[in-house]
Length: 236
Image 1 (cartoon, rainbow, N blue to C red):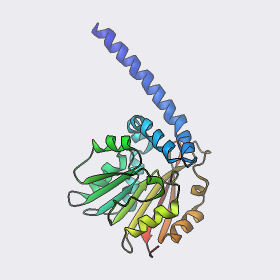
Image 2: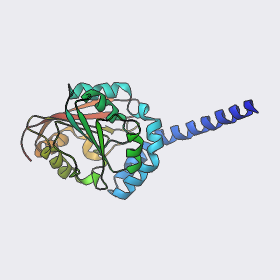
Image 3: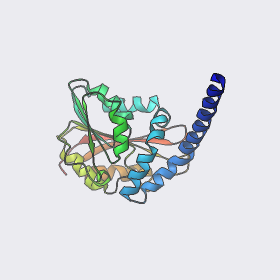
């Protein structure tokens, strides 16, 4: 009986793994196509339902080298107050919580209540989660002034980028840092939103919002990582 149970569990786990892998490999571009509908309720629904898979494959979608790049571009954030705009299931939130230490704080915003619930179970005491149904078109009024802003995988979803960047600008002092990272060129050919493929457009958009930024692109296994990083240089 024990062998039968083990065999059944192994077969079920194997089938679940294959199904999840197929959804990740084939489904991530579809996930971003949902975002292109600019329907916030659709985005929330997809995010809620995908939360278990997002957690399961977080080391695949955001491997160690990408995490090291994020921390390297940020520099020292110990003791800082950090806004994480779009925390997902907490993959980057954990990195930030460790990086700021016990004297720092992370304010993590998200549209998906289920993703926040998953993230909250994994976190330290120096993280505050903020659920916002209108996350994709603003920075929540519950977010205080901070020292650093980090956002991973959100640019493709944002419905009003100028408004979001103005909200980010408002919460930072001059010369404080930002880092936005997103994905592009899925399987080498499928784009995210069109403007993410144009470095000059990215720089102009952020400059209009009061930020001097650089753009770094790094090739991943199945997609390209786009890092937009810089500092606030004027009020917006």
